[in-house]
Image (cartoon, rainbow, N blue to C red; front, side):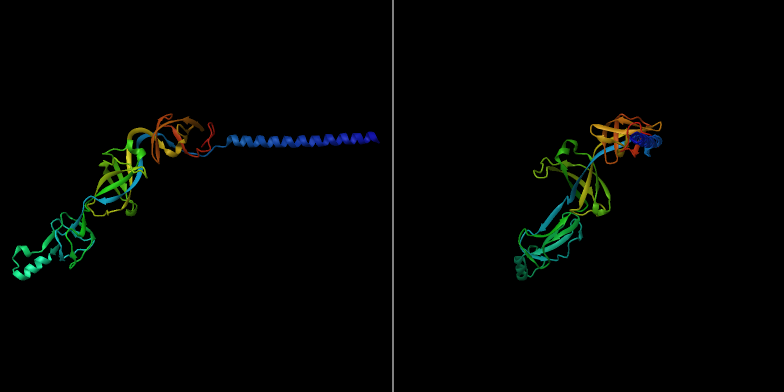
Amino acid sequence: MRNRLVILLLLSFLFLGCGRESKNAGEIGARIKIANKASKFKVPVKVVIARKGSIQEKITIYGKLLPKRKINLSSQFSGRILNLNLSEGDRVLRGETIALVQSPQAEALKRVVNDSSNGEVLPYKITAPFSGIVSKKFHYSGDVVSKGESILTIQDDSVYYLWGELPANYLPDVHVGQSLNVTFPDLKGKTFNAKIEAVNGIVDKQTQTAQIRASLQNKSHLLKSDLFLKIEIILKSLNNVLVIPRNAVLGNSPDYFLFVKKNGKAKRKTLRVGIENENRIEIKAGLNVGDSVIVLGNYELKDGMSVK
């Protein structure tokens, strides 16, 4: 009886052992099958052909417009304002009479003398020194003003000064004569071109910026004082250099790299780069003209992976 029990136990162990071995063999077979499929899988990518072209290195700063010429018109003596018919926004021409100012003494003398031809009793004439618009009005006809008191302000709106705030770390790269592209968010993206006329020699202690100045012509009178603007400064411009889309380049300075598609495989290439902007980058070494550069699907790639 005892011998029979021992034999049954041995047979049970053998049966269980065979079951586990069969299961492991099935798992191994499944894994081999998956591995074979994985080896045939090709990562979908998008490529562009590396070519030579042009590229510009730019920085963007912000600023505003201020009038190049502005003047407060006033009387040379105390008196009463006559014939002031202009309002803010009205346009004036150089030499145009803005208003008359009559002194109280002249009015009294005119009544006594009763002679309108007497030059001493004629009212003082205020004229526009240049063409422009009335930007501020301080008094009206009939008001009495003191000597030197402002009556209205005229500004020349045919040309404006552009003032931009340049971060101090860009001062070595910016100089008089550099080209600017100027846009106004409030003017639906209209673009103007200008050149730097001056770089302020004083850096603001709080903002660590220095002002740059340029002139913007305004023949259409579209531009207005204090308009907010965006300034693009072209630091460097290159032609006939190898350039590719910026999103093709991976890694951080100085360890830049990318992948090219060659014989159905992703091949990693180490790069030496030059200037760049938000869209493109110059390649100085590590890539050849005509290479198929992977620009999409490149983030998860490893050297040697199959791609299509």
